[in-house]
Length: 422
Image (tube, rainbow, N blue to C red; front, side):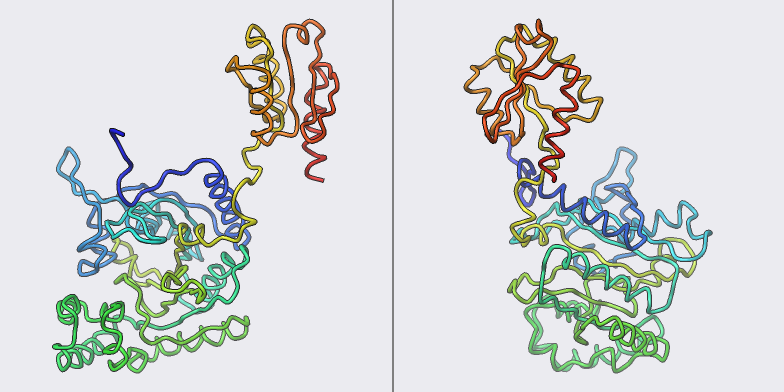
């Protein structure tokens, strides 16, 4: 092999691609039922967007972004996440002038230079939703409910919601002073990374996997919330209880992005061991201002598609019928190719899905190809059938064969499709 795919990337084809297409279709339908419309943003943005929005001291910005310079010397970045681009698009296109709540969903590739491991890639995919324009806890509850609905739709059970408040610009500075003081007393116990974080971005310590014992002895922000954050957090809990959404309060949960304010949450599946985090999100009321807009409240979540796909129940994997053809055309003689292509073109315009074997191989191999295609019917058209203006149609499940006039082919094939659905 002269070329191989870059480390941390994947190729999608065959049954796997069919499964992805089916899941993406189901996610789009689910978001639509919640009143969310699709948005697509560029795969790359100006680097400053992520530096300001995500946070210069975060691991994403300082270590993981794919940054490049274009021919005019501008710094651009392959998007490592999509909340900041959605907010940029919301402001740039004047959508904030409409008022009310704007609801978006998205799915697509993201890019982070990270160590590849189970469920984690350098090019990965996310499904997410953003609700922009309302400060109250009810919309937070809707986002949490939508994220749970994603996994319930695919039969996941035993889901666990971890919930916290990370405060706001009013109460967080005071808490950071308290936290820095506590960390200074334990600096010798911190790992190397957290030794640096203690001064620059101390709340990131709660993300550290190495400092677990120390984290349990640190002050927590929920003891330092301002009245507004405290009221919002209490209101969200009340709404979730009324909705019968179980949750666990986790004062150590902070998420890995600096734009979060107030609500932060994750959905876990305890049965998945160390890779049990399925999705997460929260509120980011200050992001619009960082993107050059006014004060616009917002909340959202993102879900890793790879983690979802790698843990799907069997009924959602393998052949889905999304790209299976209705009929497989077999040519006993390649001289019939032009006529068969013409017939197939007319049938396709009537909604029939057709694959044509133009290889010129033996009838036996073409019949095997018909069986492998998953099509219910093999349609045989050679010079003799063209002269009679009728095709030999074979039902592959039983081997029964009948002659069907060309003008009746579409109706016969579509009837077989209906029979299979019924």
